[in-house]
Image (cartoon, rainbow over all chains, first blue to last red; front, side, top):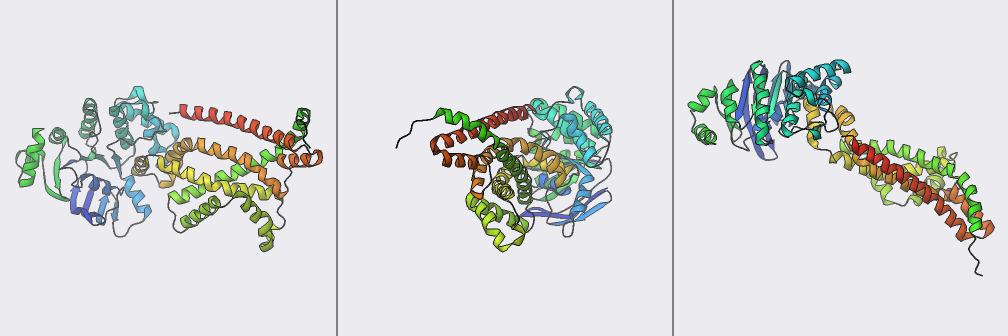
Length: 245
Length: 223
């Protein structure tokens, strides 16, 4: 369902992603791990063109966008195929929780306001925020804000939800409630690509783990393969350090 | 010859001046409305970096901030009709409104632009990530927040504009400054006449400053 082919990204002379190719099937949960600064977040941001890749192509569902020849309309189409959960939540500060979640339905999918509100309310109930519907982001804790962030991504009707280190900015006390929501989504076979440093989550939830370093995919496989029997030296070194924490 | 201060004259002059306050306020309100529309357009052109016109917008802003309002009014009203016949029929009142709105739009564009750039960029990304276009994001998420940031400085420009309408008397607009000038020349009570007109401006400005505070209080309560 998702097909990334020879994706490269350079910032000026600095090559951040080097000819990355991989596929993700419908319902699959893929977790990307690796040291900081190896292009994991950049890869995720290239998948919906928040960052424009330098070369290569991204295909999600019916939409395929080539870095060398694309137009704004294609990019908007591609973005509708996915949604994104940000490290720092990035909620709309002038909208309440329910308005944040309903926004894509109203603006992008042209749903009536009542219907959108109803859908948004149900999603917020699902992530355990039924008592915070009319709260502004500034009135919510970090964990609650991130759950709204996930709810907003769920509402956007994308084929896949992209998670960019969703728990990295959270106080430790809020991490679990956010992971719990993500696990629930995984149980429902929501296609997800998750960049994270939460190794336990990767081990428990992922169908496939991708280890990235230096702009390459070094190794990928089931959590067992990557965490118990890593083939590559660099994967071994990283996993050993990461699991010790 | 030293004359004594004539308070009675000021009191009698007040109602005469206030009759002309309508013209002053009309210029300020129309001028501000047009300036608001124009400055928002200029700010968006610069924020979106629209090819080519962004340079025209930058040039426009540079010129109208870099030259005195009085000079701009003179160019517009006395100068342009010599070269462009369509301006010949333009009355002084219209010229003053056009001049004021062009001048202030340059300043206001910069504070609107700063307000937009001050809104966390990640909210724009969030909009894009759920499939919104940049224009939709601007309209529904960024501008409503930028408006709150920009309101205090825009209100300051409005107050500044009320005072700047006094320059319109140099084009022959019959507003309160012109009336004060006329009264002064016939009575020779220059100090009292100009003091009276200053007091009128002051009271009007105090009134709008009060409105500004109420508006800011309301906006800050929202979220």
